[in-house]
Structures are given as structure tokens and as C-alpha cells.
Length: 107
Image (cartoon, rainbow, N blue to C red; front, side):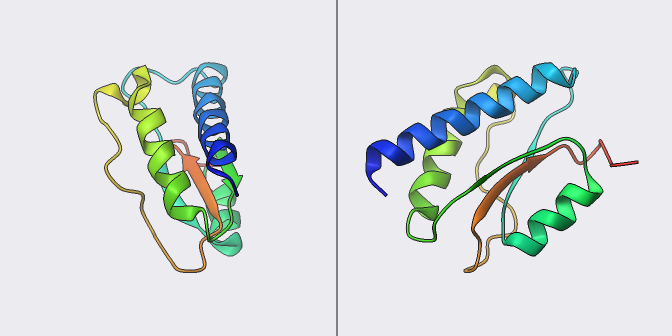
């Protein structure tokens, strides 16, 4: 994947998170937790929490995309107070970046 494509995907993912924040009426004290996950972990998170925002990535561009996503999101108001330093649950077989709110469980 070219660098321009990775940069575009990072911007689109940040845009999706910001849109979901507004769409689902997040309060100022609510935020997102971001994880790198494989398909099974992604499904488990989606079944446990709502809403979720995810994007699929190739293993070759995993590191680059996750760094760009951190940079992009840390420049947005919802992450300005509590910036992202690392993603949780990193595994060698990760292929998704998934964001969820740990307070909003799926009922």
C-alpha cells in the first residue's frame, strides 16, 4: 500500500470516529478506546460494545497506519485532552483497528 493511500485511510478513519462521536451523542467525558485486533477479537468487541468503528488493514501497513491514525486523532478535539499513546491488544495477526467506548456496552 502506498504512503498516500495509508495517509488517506488514516484521515478517513479519524473522520469516521469523529462522525460517530457526534452521531451517537457522546458527552465530553466519554471517549474511545482503540485496539488492534484480528477478526475474532473484532467480532467479540462488536458483540460486547456499541457503537464501534473499525477499518481493515494489511499486516505490511499495520505499523504505519496505526502511527498515522494516532497522529490524526490526537489533533481532534475528542482526543486533545487524553491523547492516544498506544493501541491496546497488539498481536502479530492483527488486521483491524477498532474503536469502541468501554462504557457503552451492547444491551
